[in-house]
Image (cartoon, rainbow, N blue to C red; front, side, top):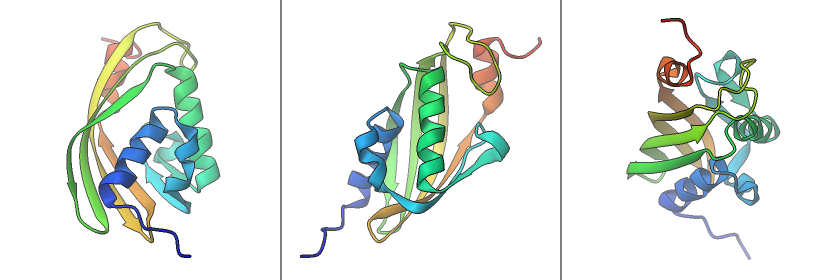
Length: 139
């Protein structure tokens, strides 16, 4: 029996849950997933295993990190989502020692879907906004 293909909205809900720490949802991303994130080392992450490691690193730095998708537009193979992320910097992040400060960032993701999996995510957000809130930039 063939596996039912989830609706794009359900894939995005599962993907948000993954970012929020539910690693049982890792199969929502393709083995060859490509994620372009200005916060990632070199701005991109390739492959499910590397993506999972990246999300775990982010969550280690911000254990209470929560993403909320606020406005989602979906077709069969493309989802655009506006989101907000909030968290407290409690662990090392990109070489920066924990500050204990809270941050709230906004962004947009352009998620491509094929065969019931997320194939790519292009994340558009301003890293400076986060760094300023965490006190990681000089005034």
